[in-house]
Image (cartoon, rainbow, N blue to C red; front, side, top):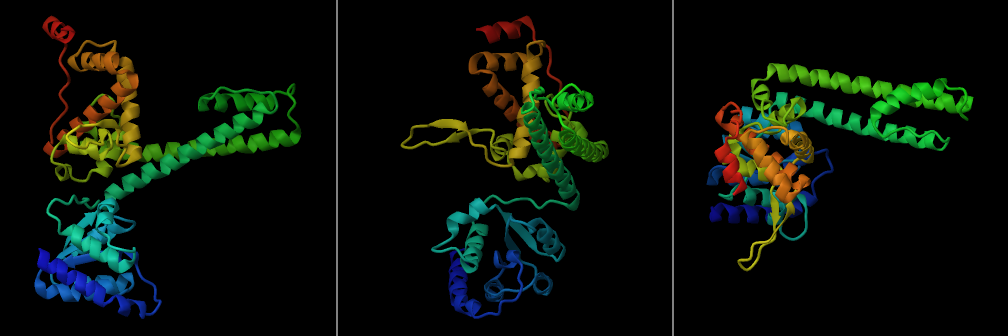
Length: 372
């Protein structure tokens, strides 16, 4: 391992000046942030390519004519596309998260040092890699990203409508449904101080709100079709606190559950575990780390909020556990605990192909043990 690492460092350093004299042709960023290795004979050829710059077509031709090897890529924009292309060409692709590559960058940041850092990170035996997503998974994630942006724009529009109306002495409740019902009534009311110009402006904003609602509904219709055609989505949606949005988002984000060794790793990847700052044998746990995908973590916590709210009305083992958490830790921490448990249950269902087992009803013995 150390031998080819040293060869890589010498090669990257020797071609640094050659790269500076290269022409300013268009290049793809992923080529300068990739490195690959298989045998000693391929290292020199591979590093010559990493040290140079070329466009995507030349890059693919280079890999297509290269014997099968391991390709290391930083998991940045376009990485999943190139992972699929290179895998089809017979190479083994390893996607590495940027935050895991950063510690290996020596001195100043440039393309040569980035390639060297990726090469060193890809060879680490304990390195964690990102599984490449399929085209279908990227389609589902695109639906979620577009819906998230539309909902954010709708929230901004509703806030602007309420703010403008408040300047005329008209106060509407915060909920978007109240704005949908209230604005048409305000526009038809001739007793308020709104002028013709003001009514036209508010009418255009209201039409924009209706248009956004229509687009969000169309996206949700597409997601419902994806959910109906996906057996894993339907299986994990049986868990309390996980619905259509969360199920499709999890299936799109986690292509292979076996990437994680257990459910704890999946929950940690989502940022639902305490952040640790321990030293000298003294454990110190802080709030949740909030790593990973914030959108997916938000969906899980929102789903847990409804579970915690209804737990007091049920008598099954899970609900009794939630009520006890809420009593001892508070409502907010109980929600995060439920989201963490749901994440671990979902991992088990995806990685092992299991079905959700409904919690059994509590007996008097269970309640007595919980009270003690």
